[in-house]
Amino acid sequence: MASRYSFMAVLFVVVTIRFFFSFQQDVYSYPLYYNKIVVIRKNDATQMVIVQFFEGLSEGEDEAPSKKAPKRDSLPPFVYSPKERLFNLTPPFKPVNMKEVYLPHSTVPRNAMTVRSHWNSGSEQFINYMNKQFIPFQAQHTNDSNPIIYVKRGTTGIAGQMRGVCDVLLLSIIHQRPFKMYASSLQSYLFAFPIANVTYPVTLANDSDNEHIVQNYNKKNHPRVDTWIEFTINNATPGVNAPGDFNTLYPGSTAVISLHSFLRPLLANRANHNRVARLFGMSVNQRPQGVWYRACMQSLFQPTEYLRRYLQPYLKLFARHPVLGIHIRSGDSTKWKDASFHLTPDVITREFDHIDAVLRNLTAPLIFLSSDSDTYKQLILDRYGKIVFTVSGLDLKHVGKSSTQSGLLRAAMELHLIGQCDYLLLTPVSGFGDCGKRLNRKKPTVWYFQPLPSPSPSVK
Image (cartoon, rainbow, N blue to C red):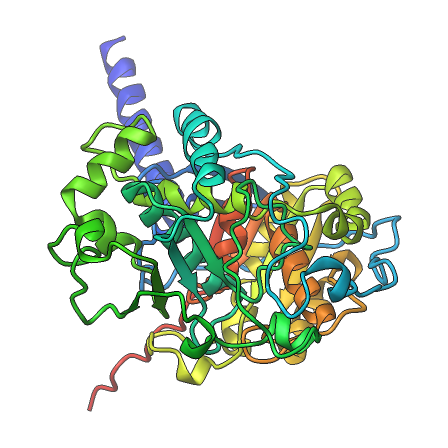
């Protein structure tokens, strides 16, 4: 009997060891910078997709992507034919009449004092603070002579303007100053700002679309600005990323121009960090950097009825299907400062197995595709065309350089539709995809296109 138990014990150990090594060989873990890791396990002919939560990153943190190349499993393409029409969904485009929306030759909307939404994101404590304290303060002091103003710089696109506006809004909250913005892509007919009279008054040459949605800043247009802060990440700016009391240093109207986010250096100041943490009801040992952009963008850039009318046909698809959003940003990839990553066809096709694995775990899934490249767009359509939908019928423009009402509408729509997806595959160096992710209240599974592994050095 004893020998029988010994034999069974040895057999159990052998089986356990074989199972362990088999599992190790058949499990493919993707890099740890995903908010959630999809693990694919191959067991004979059976494919199992197990969604695990990775808790190593705080929600919304701007961590650098891992450079470790993931292992891949070969899966047959996902096949599914939806019943709905997925093309030509955009209602006929009707441009707004700028003369009806804005005061003559001015950036100021005619309904500037009308608040069409409420602050509704962030912690409950922060929502109460914004709706009961800061927003009423803004309305009461909207004509004070000491606002802090965000001013778009150069060809900064819509995503860069959104981040810059949020940076300056937080600066205004910290120092209890009125907030204004001059961000030509963030038009009041597209976004229902919950704060009254936030548009900084600039005199325009005429009432054309170009003057309203493309015009870059010119200091001559802002005679009432007392101080200009041109922030760069490499220079120390007292009161922002260097010691100094902001209100003492800049007591009058202060315009902030920046090509880069200054959220991290702003909150590296312990006094600023502690105040923001208290506003969110967080411990001073926690990091508010990861929650601010999400809280700001979800409330500040709520769609107006005009924008919702164009979004509605797409939102019906989101209501009936789980959706994987794919954002492909090729643009000026050769000029990106992150030289470790360049988008190529191979980088895109390497994700097909992972996409298939995610789709197989869903019922009647669709893919929402946002891309600035017809070539890369076609790669996705060739493999998944039956389940892919895109924003159609509108101009595709870099809205920071030159745009039209149609192009600006498309950019705003794509941002909000990325914000509706259940899963997201993004270009890691793209601010546009990042802003779409922060607009998303579903806390989607997120992963990123990855650089191709470096070739192994040849052995001579």
